[in-house]
Length: 271
Image (cartoon, rainbow, N blue to C red; front, side):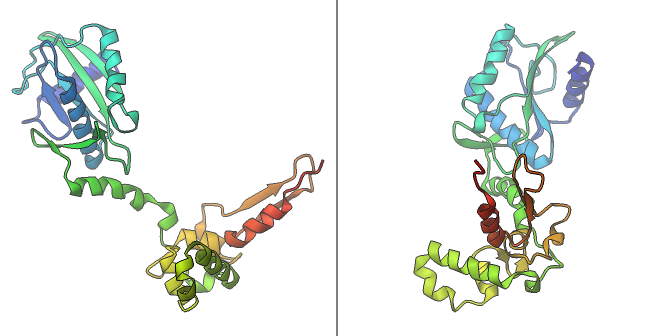
């Protein structure tokens, strides 16, 4: 990032009326507590995710009144770079700073820590604890925010998406029968009950449908061989290819719960 870009980011940040959930200023004239850096990393990363931001900033060398006072924190570049690993060792999934920038200003050296937003569906913890940022305060990340981040994966889960145009008519009866048999093997205590369940109840309990709605999973596993168009532009196809034999290939479509066995039956050692 260029010096001009960093100056613009700093200028925009100090012009804010107060610290926000996505920027934090610290004087850090000589040093700063490692634990607090880790906590702010967690807090700012989580808040960036919730605000839909790509990254956020922890800025040292600027006081609470947004006046640049200069910082001598880790003057040696190698010490700043080592901080990346030190923080990563304590943060969820070894996430660390995107970069740490040193910016020389007329009022002194400013150190700008670029913190990535928490990944979709994964709140970021420091030493196993989730932090948040409320106005100018470091706080525990409340349960509502934790669940909001975690639910991002569910919201984006392609396999659970409902196919509005699809109905039970588009599912293969033989495939549903096989699904029942496999379900009974896995849930032996429910085997007797399964036979009494309607297809709609069974598929809801197997989490293949959602309240009767036909999901992408239902089409993949149980859809008739004429139903895979519902998944477009995704391609619902398993291909078997016999290497070095132009005629040795075959493509299999839905329902995968049946065609997977046909695919496996093709596999052989020609030698």
